[in-house]
Image 1 (spheres, rainbow, N blue to C red):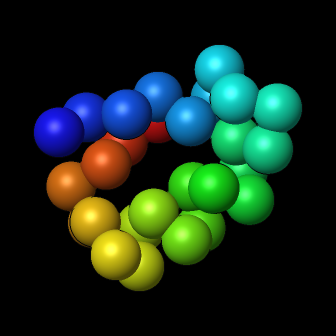
Image 2: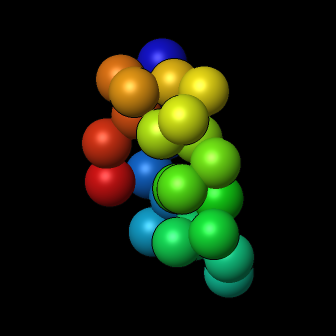
Length: 27
């Protein structure tokens, strides 16, 4: 599943946690 964290208010914060759990996620 690809999630664009950039659209979220805490995109970067979510991105760091997401990358650890789901390396497949890209922004």
